[in-house]
Amino acid sequence: MRIDIVSIFPEYLEPLNVSLVGKARARGLLDVRVHDLRAWTHDRHHTVDDTPYGGGPGMVMKPEPWGEALDAVLADGEGIPELIVPTPSGVPFTQRLAVELSAAPWLVFTPARYEGIDRRVIEEYGARLRVREISIGDYVLAGGEAPVLVMTEAIARLLPGVLGNAASHQDDSFAPGPMAALLEGPVYTKPPSWRGHEVPEVLVSGHHGKIARWRRDEALRRTIAHRPELIAGADPAAFDKRDRAT
Ligand code: ADE
Image (cartoon, rainbow, N blue to C red; front, side, top):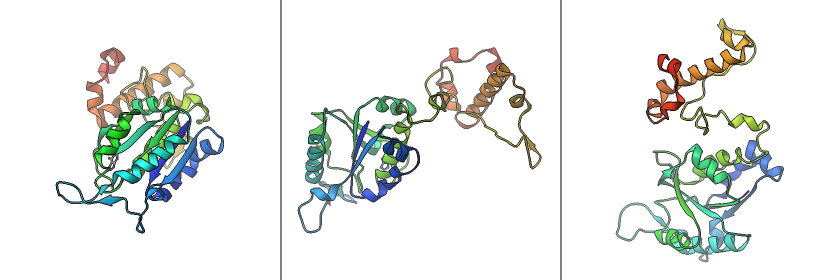
């Protein structure tokens, strides 16, 4: 997969050199290219923003640098990417959306600062390629760079070969499948006893059926405690009589 990111703070994207995403890049599984939007400005001050038409507080990102930047990025590749515009006014970023985006060969992210990008940029590229405006949650950040880090990591770990153990994202919280809509339960490792706290007996029993059932009960309990609305939205067929007792 190829990912292009156009930003006025390219250094904000440096964490993409580290850890899982950094390793995926080093191994050639992911091609990330970060571009400085100001490279496509032509005035002495490298201006990227201006006051909003209609008045109001804050500044709006000018369309011209974005147009030149996106034209250059699009011209430098095979095929047509999807354009991902991080904005608190977008559709919610979910695991389902991460899975969908992980199947795309090429994504271009346009993290904005200030009050956002002049709408005509979305109109212009919306006519040529798929544009998705995406929010990572109901809070307002200072810019789209942190959302790009979040989305890139969620997508990259789904790419074939990126995770050591391919099964390790199968039972993630929110992963599609029979456990859908349940949060992951607690996990334990050695030692068996720590400061008087014991690992639950069932986990050292070696009884795989009982372990699976225990994990499911714990997942259900945690979901009820932290995200009761997920239970209401789940498929009733995902639950059995024992669940109802939990
Ligand atoms: N830019 C600012 N806040 C954001 C959010 N919550 N999601 C995506 N982009 C943003």
